[in-house]
Image (cartoon, rainbow, N blue to C red; front, side, top):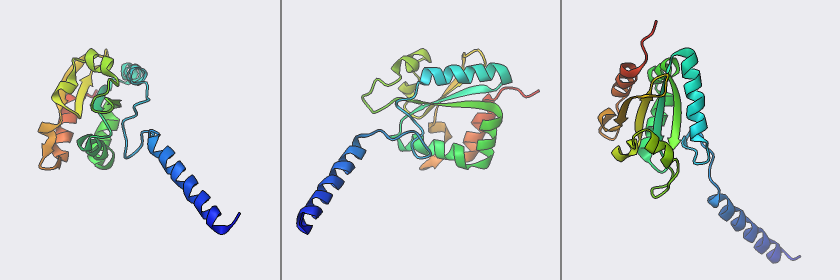
Length: 165
């Protein structure tokens, strides 16, 4: 094989692999907290079982990776020490993906919790240890300018945390 043919073959295979990687879903991670393939019902069930054991509340965060506000709120959850501490002490956190804008991803769960996404995303739903909704909150009141206000988010988390013994 001559050099020109080799380079053409190499370029073609590179483009093929780029195309294939663009069609795969990225797993949920630090920059993509919402996993469309996750079993959200099982995740909620597991969080509620842990909640019954330790008395913490369950915090459902409905959102999607295409939503910059959803990713920004998750970033704040992970990177603001006081907020991360409050979440760890008081909540079992479950991200519930609503998928792409016209998706039916987890719509059965959205309906079960009173259609909170009618308020937009991200939207937070606090559950007690029985799985009953205590509060539903869109993130608008937690925002200040073009970001979530850490003090407002922390106040929200503290307001709906279970009473500590």
